[in-house]
Length: 143
View (spheres, rainbow, N blue to C red):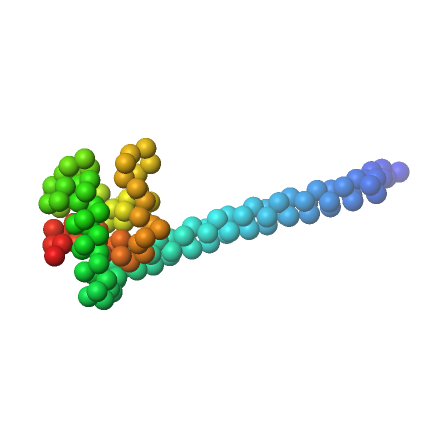
């Protein structure tokens, strides 16, 4: 007589199918999370690149430039020295500023330096204006 193969219980088959579906769902969700992370990283990179290009492409009127020169000479000069070679604040000379990137200098201008007397100028300056000042200071050609 032939032996009959044991059949799994109906509940065991269903449990195996549910387990397989759960594993597939987990894999799809993990792939979705990874895709979302990659997309977020790409979007952030694009924003940084666009922001950097924007900071370097500041187009200001002659009147705006004159106002900014006056602000740097008078307001910044009150701490950094009227010749910007140092005073209560650090020198703003190209040689001294070379340790920071353009973007870092722009952020220092806009957001100040916490824990120091360097105030944030964001309430008074746009990013384009801060970028123009940073460029002039780095090049040493503030009119």
